[in-house]
Amino acid sequence: DGEVFFEVQKKKKVFTATGNLSQIQVLGTSFMIRSRKDENKDEVYVTSGKVSVTSIPKGNNPVLLVPDQKCSVDFSGIH
Image 1 (cartoon, rainbow, N blue to C red):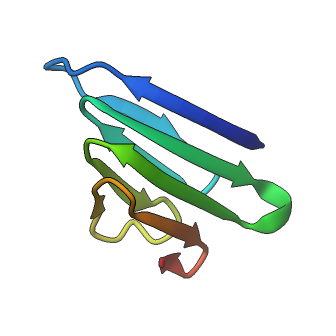
Image 2: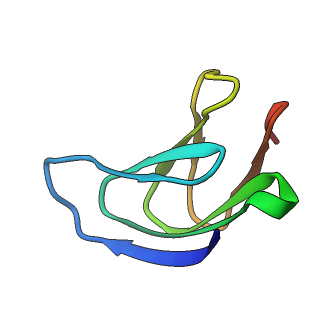
Image 3: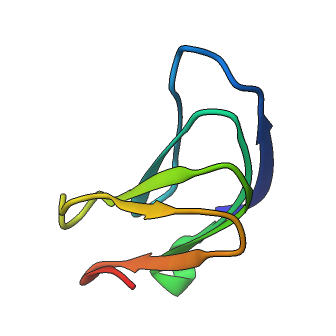
């Protein structure tokens, strides 16, 4: 549970961060994850670069986010 801000340097290896309900794959970016079990959702916000967000419960196709985009992930999927 909590909130974290990452600044990931560009490398050939993909960096993966996991929230309660989401998996985020990044390559050279800055982004924030807010993940709290009591709210039953994860929130992802990108400040630079790109991230790919996948819903763990739904396992649906990933959503690509670019700077100034955000999404929420809950048990019904990605919004």
